Amino acid sequence: AGIRYIKNDCNAALRWSGEADLIYENQRAVIAFYKSLTEKFPDLYIENCGSGGMRADYGMLKNFCLQSVSDQEIYYLNPPVLQGMLANVIPEQAGSWAYPYPNLFDTRGDLAEMRKTADLQADGRQTVFNMVNGLAGNVYLSGRIDYSDAYNDKLISEGLSFFKRIREFKNNASAVYPTGFADICDLGEFATLGLIGYGKDKMYLFFWKFKSAEKTFEVPLKKWAKGGVTVNVAYPSDSGITACVDGNVLRVNAGEDYSAAIFEIIFKGETV
Image (cartoon, rainbow, N blue to C red):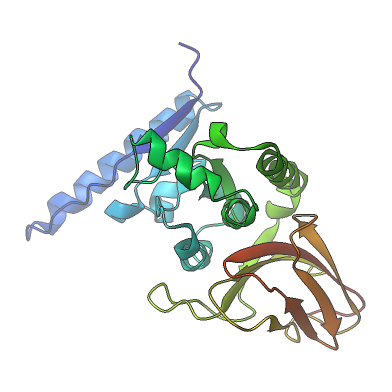
């Protein structure tokens, strides 16, 4: 039929029955089936959507192109999910959801309520936050983007253009955690996630501000910087979030709650 992309959604987990041998044989059979598909159809993209069934290990993932991360619909809770995901899945394989103009579970089917939600997004902050979430991995664009206005259309298009530009970089990047891991039950004031290149001379830093009266946040870079450091805003071009380097510390200025941005950081001279 010409189909070359399959979303394999199987979040069912085998229940423990005391028959360890049966569980082992079942998993071996499942992996053998997917391996046979990839061998028979080498140009077929298969997405594994099975983390809810604890099927996101590399016994499975070596036979899949992508691993869907989470369908968490509360957008500002996704940064901790993304941090944990990228500690386990390589960036180019980690399918990360972005849903500007979301079709939320509690308003789904209520067109008036969905339109009301869309109208609240005119300033673009929620769109940017969602796009930054998605751009941390291999972006899955979802939501009711047909409700988007011209300004938010621009933000979405800019994000997708940025994603295409850094594809090659991601293929040789790994995740780092300058400020540690956020707690999904207690987000704190802000969170960061870095993707650092193989040569360790460039990092894309994903920054999220949650609810906080603070406007300036410090991100230590000493672990990676041994020489000069420069920083540029990579996405979006007009977020209102700025950053400067003070020694080996990145100082980020973000005034609005639930705002986000991506910075390109260049390490000059000797790196570690």
